[in-house]
Image 1 (cartoon, rainbow, N blue to C red):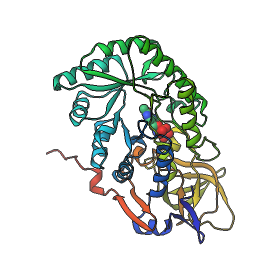
Image 2: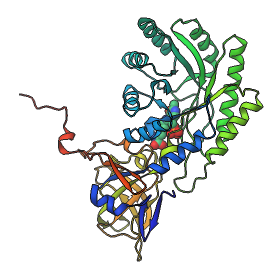
Image 3: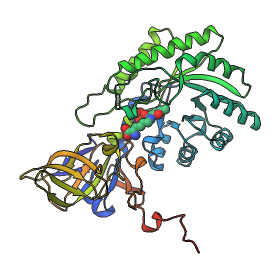
Image 4: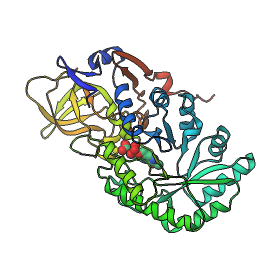
Length: 416
Ligand code: LLP
């Protein structure tokens, strides 16, 4: 994470001191580096010129300014709701470059997406084919579609973020894929443009992607035999990042391996679509949190901080490991203990069994928090959600104000 580095003994985001940011904007605070986002984006885009396409998975980080930075670089976007479509458009993204995924799209979302002229739908069931066809015919338009097929490949990742196994709810089973495409080909409101899959998230090996790709290319051959041609293969997102000891492949190796597979299978004319989320933003963000108190019992030490599972859910939900560092590292005796938040849940921790030299009032940075951090935050325990700032060299922009007390009950009312 070279965009977050120590300068004069203080952790900085680009040229800005995180101590100063915490003083100005308070804590908990999400801080993103624009340079880091742009660099990661370019790592993908450089290897995938048109007609290939990179669609940022908006669920990883949907702040308008983050989307704006990517839209300005010509990004496509992978979305899973009407809300995400609205964010992309508000941030300056083009409707034509949106891929709409998701297992259960509502009629309203499908109608809105068609009216806005989004690029295409990734369809996850045969009933959704009927749904989109019906609404497209009502509106007098033709919907571009790919079917998301489940290649039944083990992504070797946490079970909650593995999506490509037959037991997962996502996509259409491979055994049903050809029949589903034949059904789609009969529906006048649909135009088949591609084949899609997404096998899981935080993958640290290339092989499962290549195995999935082989199955998808077999399917494309079978479809061609039935007279159904597709223009692109969407391999979803899923490339992992380094949170700690993981060693995921560099973006360039991953893309080159996929492109190499296309050429060995003599399918160079297919456009490759990717939907990376985490790999673009995870290491472009940190969560700053202040140490409130220290406490020990007979068996354990606790470092109590002002950010909790409502601000960053990943450690509680997936036992995910994020590095946690003192923004101004100290000399002295380290404490071995759990870094816990103020939420009334035993599962409310940011890290367990960590070794830190720390005192009350210190500022800690939870690293690699740019993906699935703020987007998974909530108001549990009536805690206002954190502010978000973006650093651009020596400039800082407040890109989301800290929520206020009034925000907590916005839309609620007392009864007479
Ligand atoms: N495309 C589709 C269809 C997806 O379902 C996902 C993620 C992506 C792309 C982006 O995957 P990525 O490149 O970010 O791995 N909350 C979890 C991750 C859930 C991912 C869900 N789908 C976490 O914090 O680890």
